[in-house]
Length: 325
Image (cartoon, rainbow, N blue to C red):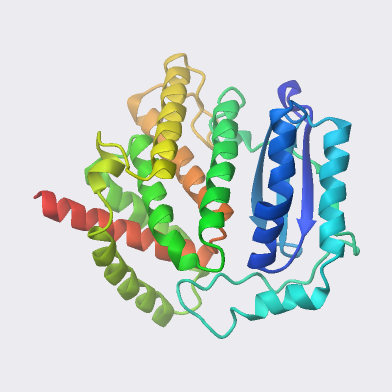
């Protein structure tokens, strides 16, 4: 580790192919144990992410877990994954192959590379450069855990139906950008840039055009269901999950602003202090971008699907501006 503050992060990589299996492991098995351990103080903080490189797997990150907590979580993961026949995992993945729509969440086809061990324990070092530096990292880490808790709630409400995640996913994308300082007039261009970034993961130009058309239709439908003033204005979202997320993101932004005032917030990737208003805006937008992606990752969204979500958010924000004008 390069920083004493972070000496103690552990990571468990749980190899399981198939989105539904991953979510079953998370929501019905591991996170229950993790949350109990956290309440008892046996884990100081935690969060999870999904990866496909090296074989589809979950990464559960734990900060200074006790030996008992680490042993119990790893044992539970190994016991459950070993009880699942490989053909069950493969069948879970195959279900998506013949239904290629924006709601198709397909896992990578890479071979599993973990020497037949379903759970691997590794060290973990936070991405300081991505989240504003070492001093700013605890703020994002707190949001990582809240993001993981929030994603677990949404997943539990939408098992086997990713279309039911559309409204909360897009809503949280807009909330996050707005609470991190992206103005209402700038939201559409923010999400246009976000979509362009993920467009490289689309297979064909025709596929991109189809997604763009579907995104516009989706945005028109959602415009009648989503109150933009509750996402970007002073109103509070009626949904309690969205309301809680809005508050948490707002608190994180305020704490980052305080660090910036003290000269302790770094512009992501450049590593330079965010001294000017322009620097602070760049830092906040970059951090917001990363948190939006990590929430989508936790919800099981593929890169191609992130493109689609971003286009929906972009069109929704454009429609909102048109109504106001």
